[in-house]
Amino acid sequence: MEPLEPMAHARPAQGARPRARDLGLDFGRGSTGPLNAITDVPGVRVGHTTVRRPPDVHSGVTAVVPDGVGPHAPLPAGVFTGNGYGKLIGTTQVTELGALETPVLLTSTLSAFRVADALVGWMLEQPGCGEVRSLNPVVGECNDGFLSDIRARPVHEEHVRAALDGASGGPVAEGCVGAGTGTGALGFKAGIGTASRTPQLAGKPYTAGALVQANFGGTLRVLGRCVTPRSLGPTGDPSPAAETGSCVIVVATDAPVDARQLTRVARRAVFALARTGAAYSHGSGDYAVAFGTRPAAVPVADDELGPLFEAVLDAVEEAVLNSLLAATTTTGFGGHTLPALPADRLLDVLRDPAASPRLRG
Image 1 (cartoon, rainbow, N blue to C red):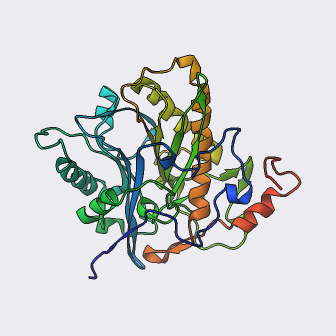
Image 2 (cartoon, helix red, strand yellow):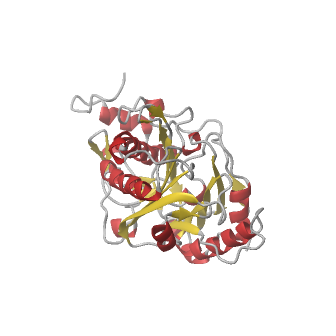
Image 3 (cartoon, helix red, strand yellow):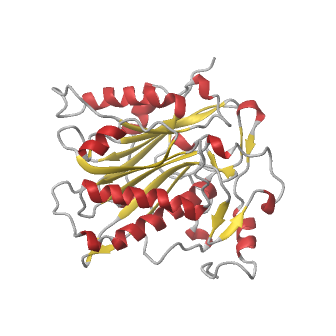
């Protein structure tokens, strides 16, 4: 068998497919950060390793890396489980202590445990961790078994380390990269998506960014319109059943918020999936991890949180659509195919006279 070679994706490739805003699609009233990505939050980096062996393996790992995070420098964090059919490793300690000790990694279901072990090994080598005897890795997963040989467990330690060591600021590659290489959502090929907003809290500007690993069932809704593969033209195989879906969301913010407030933020991130048409089915693992990058800050009053909640709702909705628009049609394990969401046909549907007026142009 050929070795699985990691392909690092720190930035979008030239000629990348359009994002939602490139098509004139606006979500909410708030402004985006300069990159419209989770990396707009200062000190947050993203790394991907894509693991492919066509036609059977389409998988990988994605790392969201806050600068300096560790067991001696934890960040305030909260977790929300919309539906718990999944593996979000480390969630109980985050819930109990409200603290994030490691980067947040995303991968394929059966690779999650290897990824967690590799994350622990990497963390123990970081400065200040020479005497660490307890560590809580946070790893989420989605089932990419429709397009990838999930039983092969193709994500190994070297892939995890490549994603962590290669994590960078700047633009974030989306679609069929990293943990999103083999995932699909709402009847289409999906993957990794990201977006950001710049809400004002108590009269001061902050940034909130979201990154999604989209792999959930339901019927896609864009600006209130239902969009199915059939409505956009001929497609390949029927999509995987909604029972096999999941979505893991990572939210970062530089707003002065504590762990309790971040748990409230995480709830809004999962709520936002409903805007996109999520089915929240029995077999769907719908999770959000939210962390703040200012652990020593005095938290803003609860009655000032409204703009942050709205920002997260809008950013997650846009990140899901970006994950779909960036992805490309993929044929994988067993000959299964998931079609890309065609941007031109999507615009045709939205420009119908009954379409939402939020489409520009």
